Length: 257
Image (cartoon, rainbow, N blue to C red; front, side):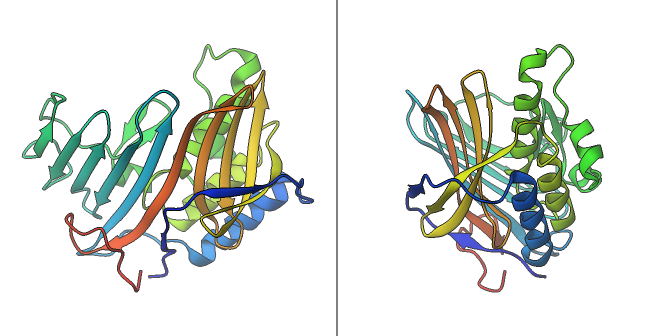
């Protein structure tokens, strides 16, 4: 199994020089690269996909979100910060899950590890998503009633938000990158580095609200997402670690990916 593995914790340095390539070109390149470097298909048997993010929201303490996920849908979700959650799932269900949290959960129904425009999907449901860019854009379209002015921004946020999710097979990730290129107003805003990783900034600006996605064009790895309002960062999500591990207690990425 060919898997992209990254592990870093540093900050980003920004180069404000506009990139020469347009968004469609950069995102097509990211799609092609992720097909070469990304997870080929399902999570391998007896392995878990581990993913950790650092989340910063203006006016709130920094938080960390971690997920461990197996091909059967079992796993673990740990959130630290203002809200503390640690839930382990022996199966793909809240039934039998062990939780340590200040938040009360109803221990019934499936554990839905994926957030999709207000809906929750299981690992198996995620695997059944279309990989067609245009079909994905329809699946991730803004909800009915979204003001016309914000439809493109919302579509950008929805597609970019799906790219944040763990253990996406390479064909689905490639389709999502190409779907993002179809969103009106998506532009290359510049180039930067995130803890030494090269990154291209793709963004969508509407009425003073800017959503940015930073992606490594060399391997198609999503590195960071930011939301800015009138030039001020209001939220920032950065990928810290992503790859295969042997158990829901392990955070060190398997060297072989």
